[in-house]
Length: 159
Image 1 (cartoon, rainbow, N blue to C red):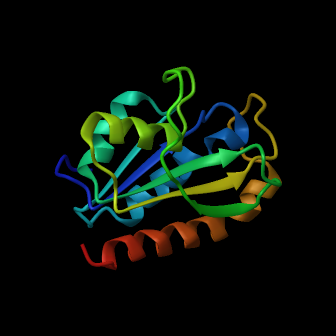
Image 2: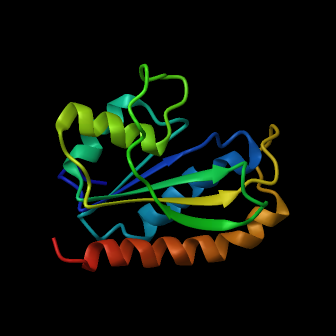
Image 3: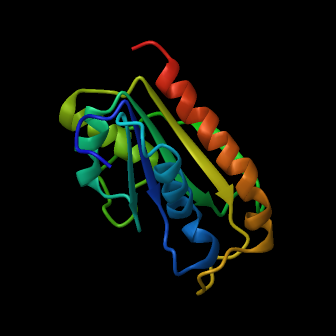
């Protein structure tokens, strides 16, 4: 990892001690190794996203959020555009999602990444444990492939 501005910022969240909730950090680690020689890719993994990440988002051209999804079918891999959340009564810091981070980044820095995407893998279980469910294990090749393709597209698109 380097500290220069990222062309592609990867932000992962998840608890690696709660089974499938750790898929975001796992994918982040995979991407960090895969793109280790690419200085314009920056990877940050946290247990949860926090408002301080807005500074990193403001400095990035593109951002790719990685997380598990409890709303999706177990093992379902999904890539979706992320837009800033609508203004609300205030930012709750207990849980900040990708949309809320983009809204806060826009408010604080008057900036917006050229592209913001969210890659999720449907969680089968978020119980205590350090292994993934069978559905998530089966989905990892598809998730890694989509992650790599998405990063390569972000890097190859014109500034």
